Length: 91
Image (cartoon, rainbow, N blue to C red; front, top):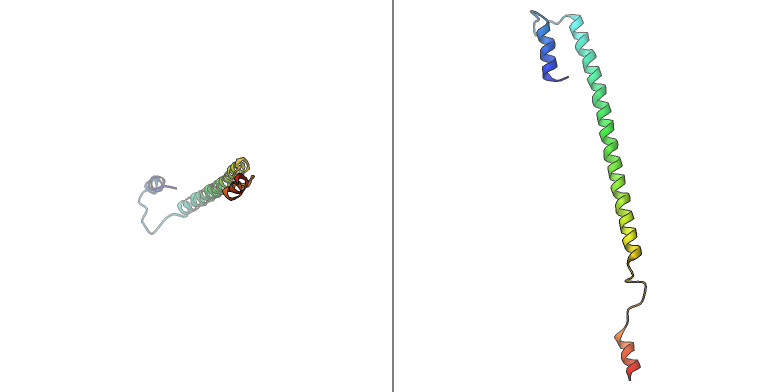
C-alpha cells in the first residue's frame, strides 16, 4: 500500500477523526496490509534466489574459464631448456 492508496481510503470516510476509525475501515486496512506483506515476502524471496543463482553462476563460469585456460597453457608441460647443459654439449 502506498501513500496514494492510504489517502484515498482516508478520504472515503466522511468526518473520520484521526483517532476514531469505524471497524469496517480498520479491517479493510489490515486486510490490505496483510496482502502487501505477502507480496513483499514474495519479492524478497524472488530477489534472494536471483542473487544466489547469479553468484553460483558467476563462480561456475569463472571456474570453467580458468580450467579451460589452464588446460590450454603449455608453459609447464615441458621442462625449460637450461643453458648450463647446452654449454656442456658444445664443448
